[in-house]
Length: 344
Ligand code: SF4
Image 1 (cartoon, rainbow, N blue to C red):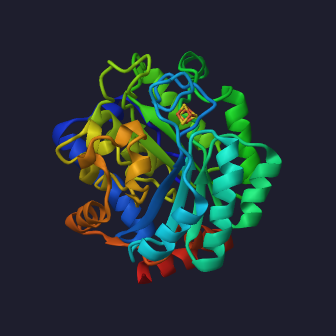
Image 2: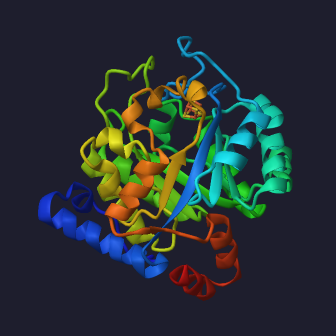
């Protein structure tokens, strides 16, 4: 960990040549930790029901325009077992905050995949009960993705981010304390977000027991109170990613698909140039994906071809070690992991 690295307003504002140098420094830091490899996972979006009401998200419960759906575990299992790309070592199962989907779809799906594949399994399901977390772990998931979303408590409440701020952080700590690898994340460029509010995210992330963290550019959800607001700024997002990499060289930092919306030219590839080391292939079946509002624009869907093309174009290669194995090796000793990754 690089506890001496301080994220400043000046860094977040960088542009042009200085920005390129800053990103190159972050990318070199990632290379030093992980070699020139990127973890490749698949994501399945399983349910778009959500009991929360985040102002910025199209899946919020007040959005009556959205057709809600839950997928079937058997159908998704078949898709993953038979059609996942060879490069995929891990799977992330994602839902709105939907306890019914967790019981009826996610748990059975994890049990099937644990039996039939050696994929690392992560889940991104929102805040659940402690017994549900234990059931998920028992079924075979090892990583929990719980974004704290907004590091400033006042802005968190104003945006009606999930549950309550302190409760969200408490769940993250509980997950880590009960043996999960926890990854989190925050949003850059929310409407009216001040620089101080953005900077608060770094302090919150640094204080949490995390293995990784994402930065997502704000993308206004359709049929939300902020539907007409501007996208988060791509440079602000990329500078935040680079700062995060320099703050925590050992974290797994994803290049999120929304980089392509905030920066339609080459936002995703620029993300890989800031030291991001996780890419995600979207394997949600088409009929379900249509109701995930963010993905309606086809050219932003991260298919296998687009992901592998971007990785190769940046001179990187897919990791043969799964994220789950990487985390396991880290728990047993950092130096062994570095050797394993560089050999992969
Ligand atoms: S951000 Fe998550 S918790 Fe909030 S409304 Fe969207 S899906 Fe639900």
